[in-house]
Image (cartoon, rainbow, N blue to C red; front, side, top):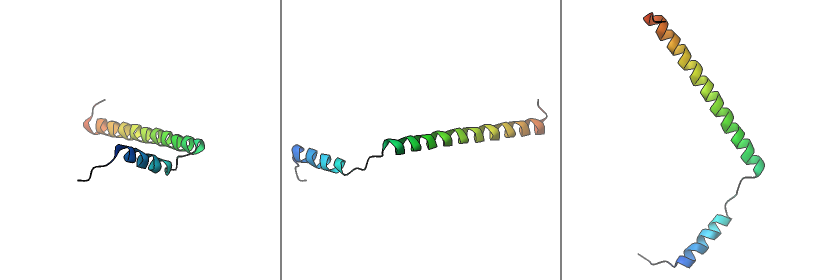
Length: 64
């Protein structure tokens, strides 16, 4: 196994990090908004689905 120079490693890490395309503030805000909207939509879907299943089982089993 070849030995590597820590200084050279850090230089390579820095050069690779410079190649990263970072999102703009606008892109970050839009993506965050979309994620929050999907979380709300999924939460409402599961709330309604759970309520319907609970109501159906209560009706089938005769429980209140």
